[in-house]
Image 1 (spheres, rainbow, N blue to C red):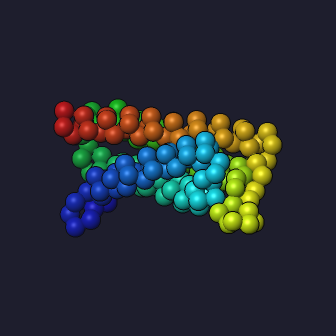
Image 2: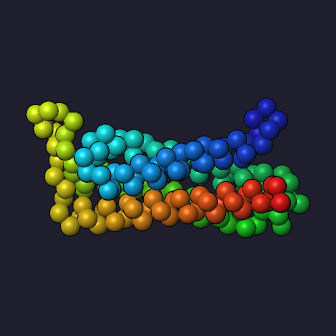
Length: 155
């Protein structure tokens, strides 16, 4: 996969590098600051989906790049493993974000309070814990994939 003769992988990776931390930080704020949930619910869901899609595309384009340049296999072996783990974590982060958006309530943005939602009991607590764990896992795997990719390219 190429875009104007440039391999797609280094281009798509930048989307993951930007969207992944934004998704993770939004998830942490959503889980830990109930009064912001009304504002962060949709950004959390959109960022989770975009991060998963870009991680999937980055993995696919990386595999395609490796097929076109097999001599790089030894150099990028660790990066490939971390990238696949990141893809899986990002894909798993989406249902966790959906669960949290459904289970965690919060205040309304309206002065009347209309639209406020209660947290759904124990499920809400579990959703918050899973969301924090997912956000941390996303940040860690982003770092591992990015660091191993940079070392592969820059030494």
